[in-house]
Length: 293
Image 1 (cartoon, rainbow, N blue to C red):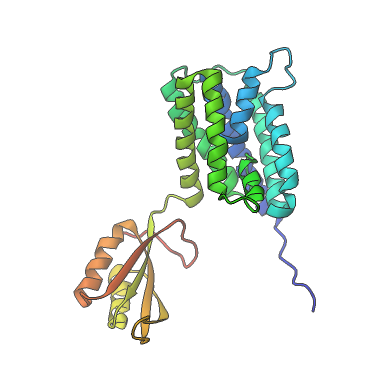
Image 2 (cartoon, rainbow, N blue to C red; image 1 turned 90 degrees about the horizontal axis):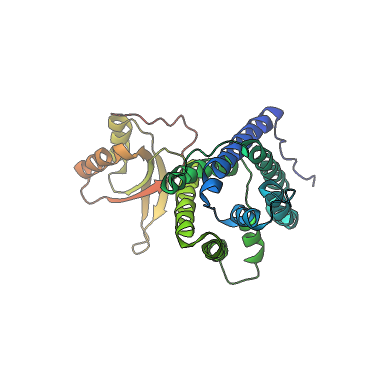
């Protein structure tokens, strides 16, 4: 049997991804050079280690700057993760790290944007998270820590998240000895803000909800959702675990603002209907629009 050939990525899509990887890496470099470094604030992972080493290494060793360190420290993770993570992801990550190093050198001689630690913490975390999030959303990475976590947790009784957390506890503890406890605390805040911003960028800003409705009046409810709320529905075939009776389950996706009206519609038709409402991170296809009714 002939092996199925996967469709190759078009040149236009590669260019599109590279543009956003470049944009994300540039934003991260801007945050590091214009906000974090001048205030002795760091991030977690390889970027954090590179920032600490860059501070500790004597000035006459200028070839071992942040740009060089972030490439050198990421290189082993990219190499060993190649077979486990995939070729496209690895190449995108390598390109992202190189963009980060080049952009960091570009911003190196600019004046600090602020010398107020709290402002550097908040806006540095936002800019860094936005940059890293853009790179991840478009198929790459700027930090090899998670790649190492994926590789090691296959043999260790830890999750990737637990491994990354352990590494970052070590990094921020090290930062407390190097920069002082207050700067380490600012660094933890920066990491948290960046982490939440990355989630927002990756998951999107559309606050949608997925809804499952189990009711004997499924036809009437489905018709009401379509005509009164303007949302399409999908009917799934389910079976009761206790009665073994077949049930029609209605599946719909609505915006956060439409949840109250949907519940009102269902309750009006069948007060005993079983409703489950779940958060969704992204909705694509079927021309889904955030309509207001």
